[in-house]
Image 1 (tube, helix red, strand yellow):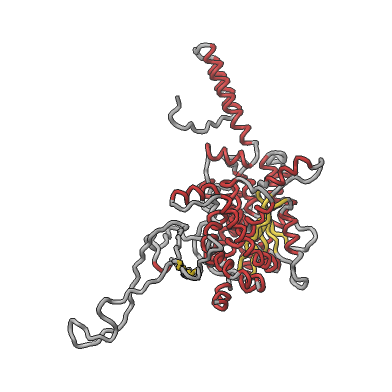
Image 2: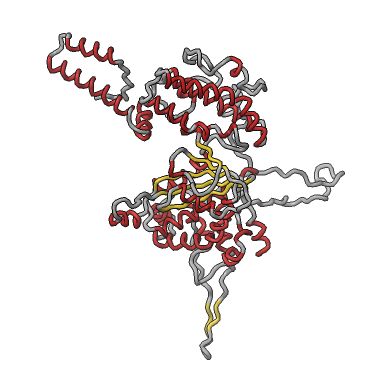
Length: 553
């Protein structure tokens, strides 16, 4: 029995042949020889087969045999500026003149994240009281003294108010608290009239659930991915039973209250300067049943599209689930764009389903995807693969420097042109030479990765030509984790209506988070003032709803 996880076995064809010959010429029993020969061949075949499969299989391979992250330090063990492991080639783009400028001339040595070598963040890891914006502030006056009183110690001067200091205390309660009100009723024995006590403000016999309770259930489901049945078990254990069907009624009401804002967010997002978008799989049972009766050739795919719209300092997060793919959903969004605006920057990977063909955009393709093509080539990086990853790492290094120096879009563009441009130009020519001179087999996986880089070069290098063009599509990749978490825990939507509720509430929650608003309070206020929201949804966006609340109250 194997007690420890076995390590990877790397054998070249000649080593494998020699090892098999040694086994056959040994003094082992014939059965043992055959067993060892078959086991070794099976191991080599399994490793080679896994390495030739697609990305999902490759990720599984890395879990067992390699690095768990794609950072350059884990992959290659070197920093972006380290040139010690370049491939020996006269056409190598890593000339000394270009490499000397890798820190932008500022003399600061940074890794790909932009942090100085050896520099550690200050602090003790604890959060101060000011970092709890949702905390209730409670003043504690002195029990016997106040400002202006004579000092009880010296009796010569009067006391004055100074900085009181702050003491943070965190307590707990059940997420939902049930209260049973018993209003007193009085009856006249003569005329039979009833007189009942009034219920407290905000409590009604017509609705059991307050806007706060509905907002909390919505956050559990569509903000944290907690499925209804788990939520039901949690609250039952806390003495507040809450059936799954009841939770659905609650979130459906919350989505109806927020629908006008969701539509307004789509209109606002259509005017954005930069639009990130991508798809992820989703299961909608009603559509999956329709697929069984669809004629051959009809579209059967079902996906959730995530779109992050950036305009100025605002970010709008949108989700759309159904049969339409990312390009079609982006086209639907752009149909609401003002005609006099310039074309937006569209950020996506190279998949054709991501293109909005009917609308003019500045297409930026994700450099992360190109880099990952080389990471997926294999765990044992050839000099060519390692060199390409290092050269791309310099681009991320320069972008981190630009962010640290708080360069605006135009200054960042010039910085990349000066610092990243020469190296990327040399890299392109060098990559072409690898294929032309057959130093890399064109039909190999490395050849495929190089062709991907060269075929999509204009889109991958827009950061050197367009002000504000990002390097990657990471903004929407992070957004889609919300939909993926929901899919992982809840597995599916039953109907298109259920998917619609999820899209609306996820969009409201994620946009509120990006606007640094409290999503719990935001969903609560949208329900409290749903009639005002319906009339003027533009006044109830996450970044301005507090002013609307103050006016309404």
